[in-house]
Length: 306
Image (tube, rainbow, N blue to C red; front, side, top):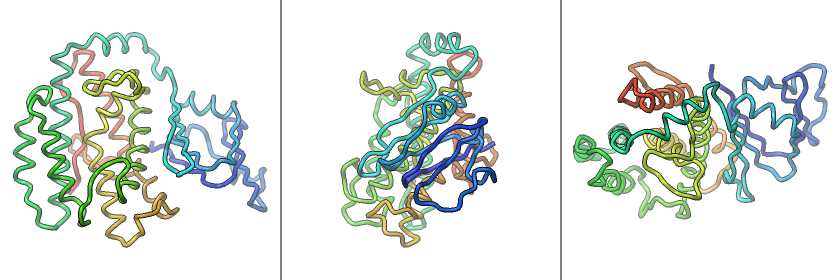
C-alpha cells in the first residue's frame, strides 16, 4: 500500500486519538470531530511535512507516527525542508542486519556504488532522450557502460556536467543548492525523496548514517544520499514537467508544492513492472540488505517507464 504524504502549511493542532491523527485548524469552521472527517489513520501515513510556525503536535502523536515508521519533515522560514525525524529501529532483527551492513567488505561497497552510478547516469540519459529536444545522449550511455568498481574514473561527475547543461531550456542554468530557480524546486523535491529513502532504509533494518560511498561525520543520512541517486532523475522530470506546464518556478507556491509532494506516487519501472516510487524504494532497500547479507550481488534500481 502507498502511504500518504501529508503537508501542513497553515496553523494547526495535531493530536492522537484511537490510533488516528486528529486535525484541528483554528481558521477552519464547521469541522465535526465525531464525523471522522478530520481524522486520518496513523498506519496510512508515510511522510508528514510541517511547514508553519504555528503548528502544534503532541508527543503522543509523534511517538505513534515514528512507531509506524513515518518520516516527519520540518521546514525552515523559507519553507524549505530543514529537519528529518526518523524511527531508530524499524526491523525485528535490527542487530543482525546492522552487523551485516557494518561488516560488508570494501570491494562489495565499491561494486554497489558502481551499480548505483551506472543506474543514475542511465536514468539521466533516458530523461534527456525523453525531453524531446534532440540532445545527444550517446555519450551518456557510453559513460554509464564504462563505470568501474567504485567509479574510480568519476564518470558520475562527467555525466552530471553534461546533464545539467542540457536538461533545462534555461539560459546559464547551474545546478547548486543556492543557485537560481528551478534549484529551489529541485532542493525541495530531493528533500522529500531523501525522507522516503531514509524511511525505507530503516524499515529494511539498515543504518542510514553508514553509506556505501558518501562519508561525512556530520551527515546522519549518508546511505540515503547514496541510494537516492538513481531516483533523482525522477524528481528532475517532475520539475521539468512543472516548468513546461507554465507554473512560476521562481516561487514554491502551493500548486508547485502540491506537485512535488506527489513524488511517492510517481510511476517507475522496477524488475520489469510498473510501480509507485515509494514501493520501488522499498524493493531497492530490501535488495541492498540482501547484498550485505550475501544472498545477492545486485541492487534493484528503477528505470523510466515508456
